[in-house]
Image (cartoon, rainbow, N blue to C red; front, side):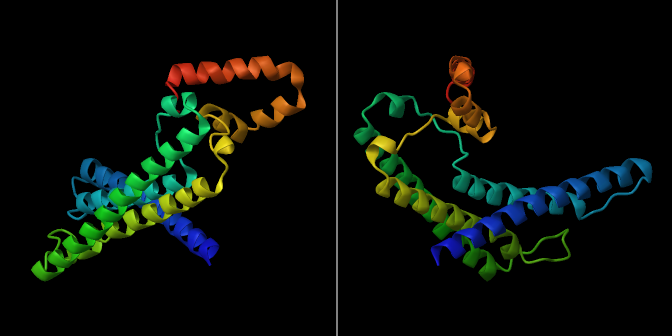
Length: 206
C-alpha cells in the first residue's frame, strides 16, 4: 500500500512540476511575441504564468525530498561517529517533518479563510483563489510524507551504513563512474582524486 502511495505521490509531483514549468514558459513566450510583434497583450498571461511557476516550484521541491536532492551540509556528519550521525539525521529530519506538516496545516487553515472571503482572481476569469492556494497544503503534505519515508529508512538502517557515500560519490555513481571504479582498479586513485576535487570546489554542496 505504501509503495502505491509513494508512486502516486511521485507521479503527481513530477507531472505538475513538468506541466507547470512547460506551460508557464509557453504562455510567457506567447505573451512576449504578442506584445512586441502584434502590439497586443494577453491580460491573463502574467498572472497565470506566475501561478504555474508557483505550482511547479512547490511540487518540484516536494519531489526533491524523494531524491534527497535538497542542499545539505554534511561536514559534521562526516566527522562524528556513525551512531551520533544517525541520531543527528533523525533529529534534523524530525524537525523538517514538523515544519512541513505545520505549513501544510496552516496552509489548509488559510485556504478555509480564502473560501470564506470568496477571494477571486481579477485576470483569470474570476477564478476562486482557493484553487491556486491548494498548492500549499498539498505540496507540503507530500513533502512531509517523503520525509517520513526517509525517517523510516534511517531508523531501519544500521548506523554504520547510514552514511555510505558522499554527495559527490552518489552523483558520480549515477553517471556510471562508480561501476567503472569497481571494474578497473587502475582508475581508483584518479576517481578518488576527482571526488575530493568536486567536494573541495562545492564545499560538499553539489
